[in-house]
Image 1 (tube, helix red, strand yellow):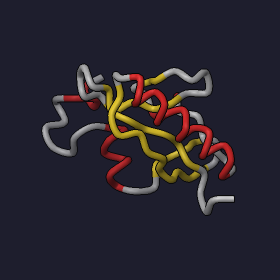
Image 2: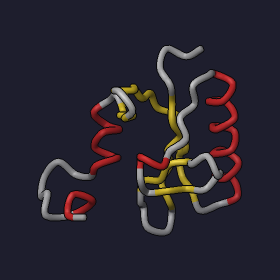
Image 3: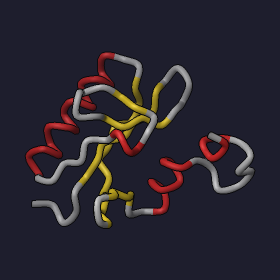
Length: 99
């Protein structure tokens, strides 16, 4: 098994929005909706789905990233993914923070 569980992310081409692959094989802008791969095999399946979706168009640069569990919550580990999930760290009156 991978050291950490993983989730799959990409960017939507038509608006550049960060999206996450869900259990229903849909793309959501909410990190909380992301399917969490607990095994290497599941992570490989998610990545294969993302790469195929990229070839079909509409998505750019799908990749897996590590997450951690804190109680019942799941959080990205790296700062880059935290920022992608929550929005910019400046001008918090803009972006996802305003919702």
